[in-house]
Image 1 (tube, rainbow, N blue to C red):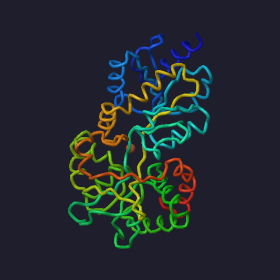
Image 2 (image 1 turned 90 degrees about the horizontal axis):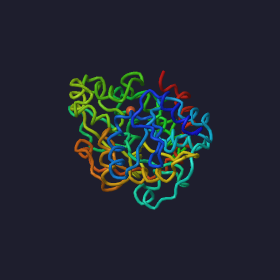
Image 3 (image 1 turned 180 degrees about the horizontal axis):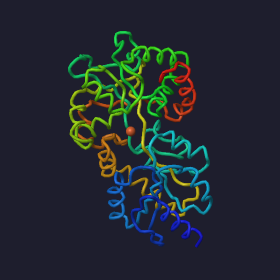
Image 4 (image 1 turned 90 degrees about the vertical axis):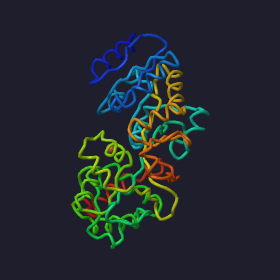
Length: 342
Ligand SMILES: [Fe+2]
């Protein structure tokens, strides 16, 4: 009763609600910070196959606060968010519960899920290097190369404090320590063509304009630009660049971030939530999940969008994201220390 009341309140309060809040055993409630349009087709497929209704509750901000406030009576079954940092924050706040599933463990690499089954990556975005098609001949680069004086005045990147970049810096700290990471940040700063800032797509825009030759940005923006989904102007930005899948100098792999999910601690429909999670790593769902935003599926062998496939074979850095997450704070402090954004 209380739970139904809370669910109605939750649904009424959300900016966007999809699906009916049917009070039946055959439902699952997903709190998502992702634009519902991206994942809705997947949930519809799940409902068609399982008969389980998915109630999507779009929580743009303050997901953790809201669930903490709802407490034991929270109707939330599953959290769907972007950035492993947000997943780990939910775990650290005690808002999740572990899932033991052979299906999930077989589909998702160990580095891309909590060791204790508290969170799972479902799609990936790679932190890649954009290079000028016109002016750059390199076809392979490391992240460390961006600090090489040969790129002086030629590098573009968004704020060092953006989670996409603090995550990359945190990975370098995890590998080589804070001192090396500091030296790298200073080197990249010395190479900047303009102040660190703007968005990832601005790197491609500024390469087209001749302002910079190389830059760091997420992989999926290339799909959004080249496909025309970001508007006609951006097609030219996307076409002005080549994409390099860099590794750190250890050669281990490319740094990725993820979108993913975690089971809510007080999930009233736990079994259905686990079924949905397992559905999301099926071949069919992985293809749709990745295509929706030009991401990489987490499941090896799931098909890639042709634009994404054109970047070459992605080798994922095997460093566990949980380990990277532990250095995010230090990364942020370093960015301030070297005045990266000044
Ligand atoms: Fe983004």
